[in-house]
Amino acid sequence: MQGTSDARQTMESQDELHGGVVRQRGNVMGKNIQEQNNGSNETTPEPNKELSPTSSKGSSVVLILLLLMVGITWGIAATAYFGVVDYKVLVGIKETEKVVTERGEPPVMSQDNQPSKEGETTNENMKTADKDERDNTLKQTEGKVKVKDTAQDPTKSKNSTPKKTKKPTTKTTDGTVPKKKKNPPDPLTSEKDIPILKQLREAEKLLKSKQAAKAKAAYQKLVSSNPESPMARFGKAESLFQQAEQERSNKLLQECIQAYNEVAELATCPPALKKKALLTKAERQTFLGHLRAALLTKTQLARDFPNDEKVLNQLGVAYLMIGQNDKAKQVFETVLDIHPGDGFALVHLGFIIKIKGDWMKSIEYLLPGVTSLEEGTQEGKFYFHLGDALYRTNRTKEADEIYKLGAERGLFRSKFQRSLYNVERLQSRPFWTPQQAKVVDYVKKLEKNWKTIRDEALKMMDVKKGLFVNEDENLRNTGEWRQFTLYQRGKKDAACSRVPKTCSILEQMPNAVGCTRGQVKYSIMMPGTHIWPHTGPTNCRLRMHLGLVIPTTGDGVRLRCADDIRTWEEGKVLIFDDSFEHEVWQQADTFRLILIVDVWHPDITKREKRTLTPI
Image 1: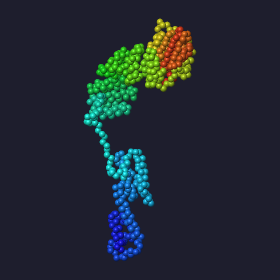
Image 2: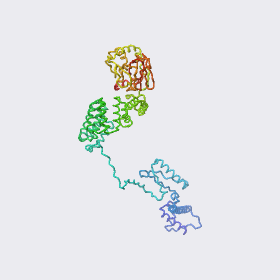
Image 3: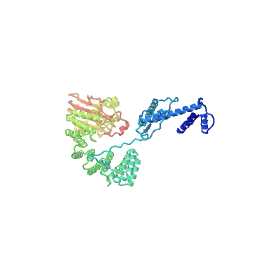
């Protein structure tokens, strides 16, 4: 009885110790414990008698609890000392690894893996499950998380957070910390602009988003409240120009020009903004075709900025545009005196000298100017004239290289096709058939009436009458070449009254007499004439030659277009694209007479025929 009582007392002590781990018992065992505590006189079983099933079950529970306590205690001690036993795995508890995101917050994790129903999950299985879950978590966060495993690194606390690393301070050689550099002041901004910088930026956003009317209203409001703000007035001018473009309004363009002028006249206007405003004003005046007004604006600029190469260069261009090449030459020479090697001045001065016919000297300016690659030097006309000057001074290989370089840089369609006023989509080839050019009817009319056309021309060949005038494009190397113009830029010349039958035939060819980028003229070339290789100005036309008097004596007459050489026949039409380089030799014993008729390129649209600038 004493043994049974001791066992029961031990069980109760364990109950109290473990907080009710074994409180869930059968009714019988609970009744026996209650009677024991109340001092019941009921006889207990004899020692040699077997315990009831309930008593046996209670003993088993006690034994299991004791074993668990021993195991847990040993596990804790061994883990702390050796780090070899995972006591949590031993009792079936899995520790969830702490996953720290970039924001420093643990993400929501899935539920812990549980042991199997049979309780057969081993330590190795648990570790494998942990690794799989960690891998899945990393995949879900696409490599943007950091894993912190406190079970494997006992030196780190679970609640510790990563420390921010301090960036090393850059020091100068003397050990002092350099001061932060301040942004340089904006040379376009005045003190009067500073209080309204935020509003100016907001208005500028409207301008950049092409909301011209809203931008103009915003700038006008700023001008009204801040009349001395140069940037507000400049913004108003810019918005007026944008609106003028959108509405195609010359009236708004005039207002825009006046607004730029108001900017420059402000006493508070910074010099940089004044220069920008007046240069832009001159550009808008040029756009309107007011070339002399633009010249006056640039003259004012040159007075205010006498040593500014950009201002002086623009003044030189203004003189060129109104045909005052000598004054332009003086300006560009002044620029080179102040700023030797200025590429823009070099190419323009070389261009002027080349036009005058001094090929050798022009190369001295054009070549270094083109190779400087400075802004304003990479234009087709400079490569065109440099190559031409090189060719005429017998530096043909260098000329060919310049033409190739111009084509590679997109300034020419090819080394042979060097016209400067082009419509890019047009098909091109040196020689054309009437079918390709879509002028079959024109060719038939010309070839049918070629004798009538020839006879009228021969009557006009009297030099004393002065109807045939010398070619004036400086294309002639040797000999004599004269022309008699009937139509030019789509307009009929008064000379047509002298050859009425010819002009009557031509009037039936609207794509010829209406070609604003072409001419119709007689051309006479005397023996011993050589025409330099040259190209026409545009690819928008094709050129027809009707043979009227074609000598066959001597070495005859020849036309080279690109790398193809042909000759003329009397009464036949030859069609070629004069935007390709072409060259003529007249080595016969008598004159050569042809009728030149330019026609629109077959790919030019009706709208383009109406709107393309005449040449």
